[in-house]
Length: 389
View 1 (tube, rainbow, N blue to C red):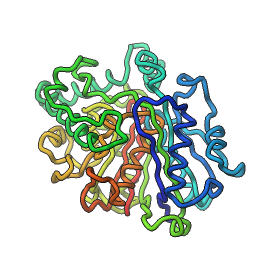
View 2: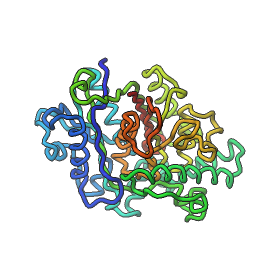
View 3: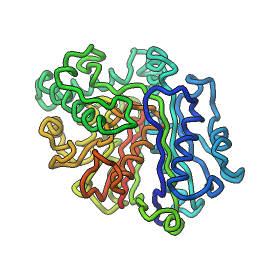
View 4: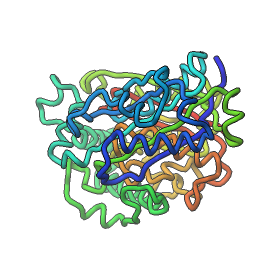
């Protein structure tokens, strides 16, 4: 297997967009191509992520239309990927694997989503399709409900009073909004307070509005190339040194939502491929779809013991300049936004910029190794990518 690197990245602003999915991806893709100092004709394949284009715009089979808009050669196949919220990460992982295997030399991969056009009721309904349609959806379960249950289970399992846990969860939101306030491409680039989180409307007990990430529009893309090719493309290559992906079934088979076994399985493979462990990580972009989700993730990734990560944001350990791994310097899904088909690619964009020293105010000093963690559905898919400068 060949060494593989990210040569260039591109990303639209997240938020509410009047552009179509294909138009947004074209903007992000062309930026990534320019950032790689190549032309569209140099791309060997397009791996295109999108989840809900049929509901958003009545459009499936977007990949060839994006291919055409980008001006890619007919010989470069365009393939759509879907893995719920992990869609773009899965697309990027497969691009890296095929470049490493020698099938392609240069691949453009990423994703796009235009969720706000559906408005909240329809978006909530379509997002919930990532739950199991026979065993979960008939109960009225949506993702806030899943993570609300996880918060209750965490409180009970580790004997942490729910009100105390809620304050620590609120600190996760405050921390990520602090980071996002320095990100000009974030959906909500503004600081908030613990009091504001705790005074918000209840969504799914104990999760309140600001415990939850928003629906967003946006797109992100990366150019992945073999180590030989990347030498002529950039003097700042960021190498993909480990990846992992794991799958699980319905929640009734998973049972303990406080220990995300899919994440543990995926990250174990990624750490093994990279020949590192959690102590080697400097910066992490993880899937904070809800505040409790970040707490569950930092434990399953090995940054904290199980039942011990809930106070990390409160203690300032995961904040820029903290004593632990910096978590979500982009603002995370919570502040940066969550266009589901694009989220994983945006996480890779942030880590690449961090490792290149191009993150501006939110730069993690001395960052050399970063990790991407993306969750699809209710723990059904986890995909991890480890990058090194």
